[in-house]
Length: 381
Ligand SMILES: [Fe+2]
Image (cartoon, rainbow, N blue to C red; front, top):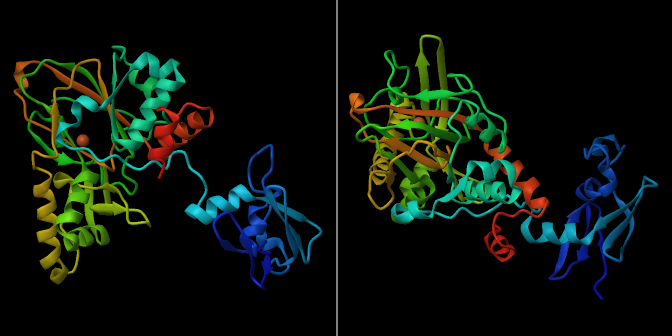
């Protein structure tokens, strides 16, 4: 059998598929004794050692790698399952690391729909909802109670409310002195909310309290699907939008938010994690003028793609429904409506993506996956 090989900075251990190298500092930090069983926080500080840790001896024992250290009496027992995980995916297992399922114009009948009462009382329904929000970026909660506590109690089931300049909640209806185009009866171009905030809101709730107007259909598209289509059709345009930040603002009498965002957000693996678009909150471009010669055509191409029917879902927001969507991925808008044809009132708020994923992880750990086990395994990134 292949042996463990010690070297000055780390060791090589035979795992199921191959021999894999691990750094000593990483191994010392990965020792389960570093985590306090009660607080579940790290209680070991690798910087507290006088020198970088170095193994004196190491052996495989049962399902652990046992390491004796040169300068410490501490013996570490690292589970082989942890080493296998890092050898395979390079990071900790994460039930919320679910590959997004891109969607297109025909998706609306397939949006996950869960009644509010089930979300509040049934962990399986809560898992189904939170999983859909991670996977599809959008879901609809139906049968919302028609009172002011309805939306806060729904948000609470997913995460704490994230305030914005408007406060904890905002009401989308016609206002006399609107602070935002949303508060008029005009059409609202496809956008993500509040990109002028340093960390734009993560997950948006829009509870339709009343809708009797003519027109005003809600528009949604999967920004990640459009971004992937752009990557396919014009890789250079994709690169320009993913590599450069552009300025956004949100200004009124009492606030002046400004932030720079990438129009296409990617993770370190290059996967599209979101988009940021808002014509009405976009500031004057401040990229170098010669870069704008290529940036603008790419940007305009992306904006035009967002108007293509192949991506657009349009439906009427019905009173008693709450649409929930990932504000960094799902781009939304609204057709104009006739202001005096009836009443249209949506109440909105936000929570963040981290809270959504945290809620799903806790549910998944309790066995509520929100789908069958085979699908969870298949979809796991
Ligand atoms: Fe919006």
